[in-house]
Image (cartoon, rainbow, N blue to C red; front, side, top):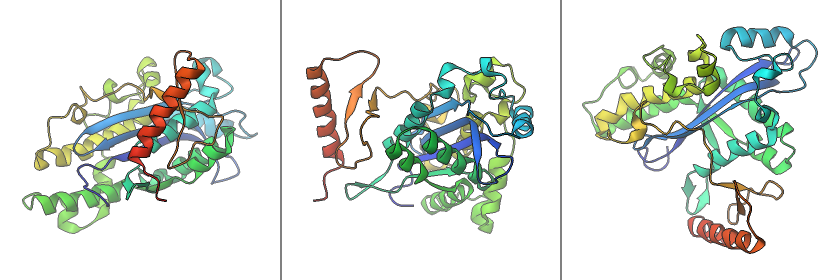
Length: 307
């Protein structure tokens, strides 16, 4: 792990998907959640989207029903009244995913490093398939390439590597991973039901509103439950407790909603110059130019040109 592991920001993802009836590699995401955290700050922010992926191919009814039975998520194309209008705004959902990942990319010698997220190995196909599906349906080739190029790594191995790091900082710390040097120990701990499994604070509004008994299957609950498991393991040992992001009751639970957004009509993946515009209210051309100048100047200072 490059950089200080206490400071570095990690992004965890989870997707609840309908499997394609004829292809193991193709999925249709119905719920996607992601959260960024660091050991020092705890949970920084999260984003969750309920998606109605239309049209579904012929023969998808059985797999759609399996997902509903497992998660209480509505049936796309059948229970459309249970989806919100934004559930079919694939471009905005994809852009929000990119924004959040982009904002937390670590830098190395002034340049952005690889786009990396974490999930459990059993969830790799669903996560990768979701990025591919959003990339193909966002109607933006640059945005699509950003999503398809995201690298997915094993959350259990991150847990293991962090255990070794904490042990090096505080030799009195020991757990099954440091004793036996087995990633599988961390995987078992992350998958174990715990006190957060049915907490409203870490569950998406859809599953809370539905009064679901499947709250522990909610993608947001899945992501944050595992993050808080990791934080509980290390925060006290490192003497970092105190940030609001370390507690279920006080972490920033509102859905990720940046005050600025990428201009989706332009090529936006540029490490040295990005354009932004205000959201939520109109601006005059002069105000827009002024805002773009401020944002471009700021990003140039943070990500200086290598030339």
